[in-house]
Image (cartoon, rainbow, N blue to C red; front, top):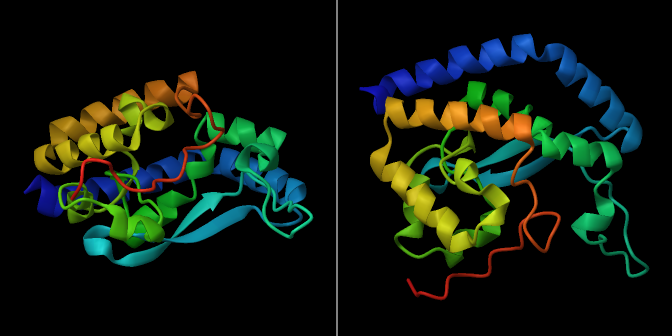
Length: 204
């Protein structure tokens, strides 16, 4: 009953409440990023949701669009602005996704929606992460986020899909709050953002 009905009810109520309470912060971040990024405060990108249905995710834009001499975007570490780094550290860049939750594209809690280009690279087991709606935060995010390997992330995602319950969601919610206040696990050991997924070495 929780998975099929009450989870959606909780998503709508909590998302609306969080947006209402944090609206002053939302407005402040929007203004500063719009100034820092030449009027572009939001980052919009197509991502796969439940059953691999494609939707457009909305985030605050923490990187500029600076390019090299060849016209290609500079590495992430060189494009993250000072304020963008602050926004990422405390997960403020995720706030616009509350709109995705209200629309029904996402849930507050679930496997993070990744790039469409990754879809052919998942093993059969890893692809189970698309059996539920993606989330703003999830079991992988509170167990290492960008400091763990892709395989570990997917193991956590599949565990969540198989064990989904109100109790697990409640645990993830409170652990996320602690992680946000600590600004923990935003960067991997070697990169400012997570390295791109190129496929698992353990086959399909």
